[in-house]
Every structure is written in C-alpha cells, then in structure tokens.
Length: 155
Image (tube, rainbow, N blue to C red; front, side):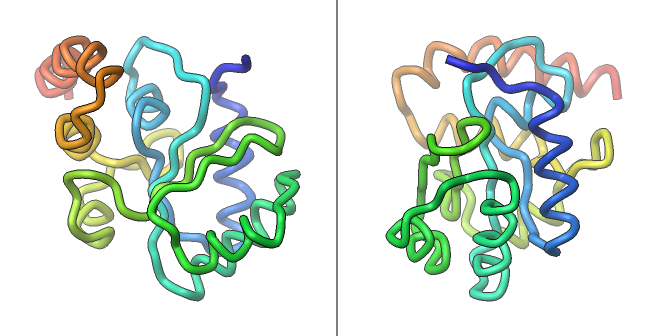
C-alpha cells in the first residue's frame, strides 16, 4: 500500500491548475501539507461541486493517469458526495460534501496556501473529522488536535 507523497500533491496541483479545477487538499493529506507529522495512504481532495468544475476534474484525472470507468466519470460529473479512486498512479478520495462543512465557498475563503497548493484550514480538517465520528478518526483526533494547537502557536 503506497503512502501520500509530496510529488502526488505536485502532480495534482500542476494538472488541476492547467484544467482550472477548484479544489482543496483536505483530510490527513491536507494536514500533512500544513506540517502534520503523520502518514496517510491516499490523497483527499475537497472539490467544488459545480457542473463545469466537475467536468474539468474528469479531464484532469484522466491526464493524471486515472483509468475512470464511465460510471466513475458520471459520479464525478454529478459531484457524488464521496468517491474513492484506486485505479490510478496513487489512491485518491474525492469529497464533494464533507461532514461538518456546509459550503465549499466557506472552506475556500478559510483556505491556506501552502507550497503553492490550496489547503483546507486546519479547523475545517479537524471539524470534519469530529463530525464524521468514525472510529479511525477518533483514534487520530488527539494527535491532530495537538498539531492544531502547535500550528496556532507557531504561525
């Protein structure tokens, strides 16, 4: 099982920039870009759920090397809440409706630019994990909360 690497973020940033896709790095991969010292097996992207943006995302993913079935392309175009892609150069979770965040525009306005990438604010990442209330999030949440406190003190 591969882990998230900085080069994955670079590839996404480059291609999504070319296609004009509006997205945020999210979840643990977003936290890692902010400096969180942990690992994750996939890249989490929170994507703006607008028809044109979703259509551009399909093209960007194909260019990145994802082998998308017709069904997956349709799910992306309609902005299905959550899509896991395991058929490309790295594992990718597309999130169109994360727990705890009502509107993409709100998260976009709170974003942080890190290494030239749009990254969700640490409060949105933590809030979404708290709202999801999954066991794996409950286990990692104390470390993530500690990182958030460190980040606030060191910004």
